[in-house]
Length: 107
Ligand code: HEM
Image 1: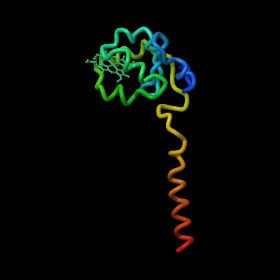
Image 2 (image 1 turned 180 degrees about the vertical axis):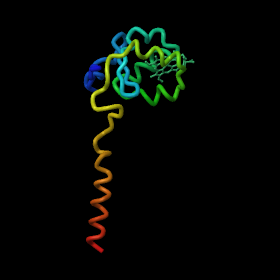
Image 3 (image 1 turned 45 degrees about the horizontal axis):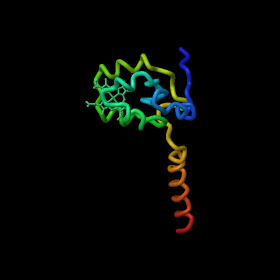
Image 4 (image 1 turned 45 degrees about the vertical axis):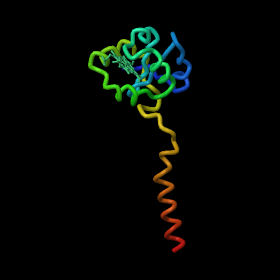
């Protein structure tokens, strides 16, 4: 089971009408052909291109029927896991620790 890996950069290369990839739950889907038939319209899909569309997708409360369409449009998995968060978040605990040590040293 070796799924194709898609980078955020590659995701960003498919965000136009007719060449549209979406990132939902760590997986990348090619919705190029589906966009025209999407009951929610193609504009919302276009506006979610190139970034993580998971939250928007879940907010709508898509039906099981909608979810069943996903596997047929699968391109691959996003590289680096589901959440492509800015690495700065990983430093916050370290910063807090550093601040605490500095505080202790000064008092
Ligand atoms: C590959 C991804 C997507 C698929 C396969 C999909 C599929 C569908 C389907 C089948 C419906 C009809 C209602 C239902 O069955 O739940 C729907 C409705 C809707 N979708 Fe999506 N959708 C996708 C992504 C998105 C995204 C990223 C948005 C962003 C906001 C979105 C917004 C909406 C909205 C607003 C509706 C409601 C339309 C209405 O009832 O008037 N969808 N979608």
